[in-house]
Image (spheres, rainbow, N blue to C red):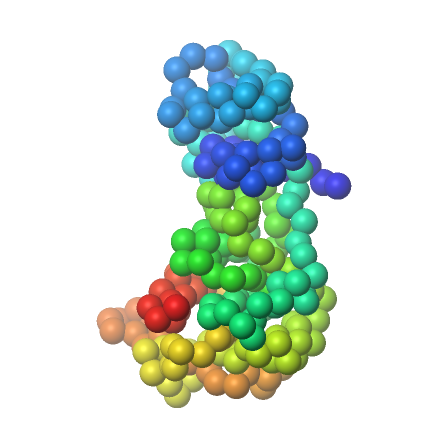
Length: 245
């Protein structure tokens, strides 16, 4: 099973919280650490994980996009988290209120990580990801998610259309997102259990994905900029639909 090198202390602490047996090694810079990195080192020692101390980050070494804090050379080696079967992800779709997400070929790992962080913040019940032409769940995704990957169930599927049909059979309504939709997100029925489909950074949702939606919606611009980054758009939509969950 693949191993990942994480550099965001909050991502590492989330692994300690949910599956401490999957942390293999922690490396920290010798000297004063941020509070978060000190917590990582303490948790590692408490659970018997080896902690290596180094003199510091070598000149010219780049800091990771995940945003290490006072410990730019610090990191941890962890096991990749495994997704679950689609049926398991949707097991409570017909009995409990909630919101699910489907990502249709998102290719920027920073967007995928930001979506996971948003999903964890708002209590999204699960995420369906496409396997092909999509960003893998890399170290960058985990670090940008800042723990979100550990707290939101996910399932990686080859065929999004088939997954949507399974979601419909499980009791979910399918909401597509498109800047060309007739209805604004504020007009969508928030009492339904939705699987919200978010599209690729450049092309949006594929036509096949749009065709299988029960409804589509847009975020109406209020100013001169006509579009949002997909991770920001996801946050707006999830926040809007979560107000009655």
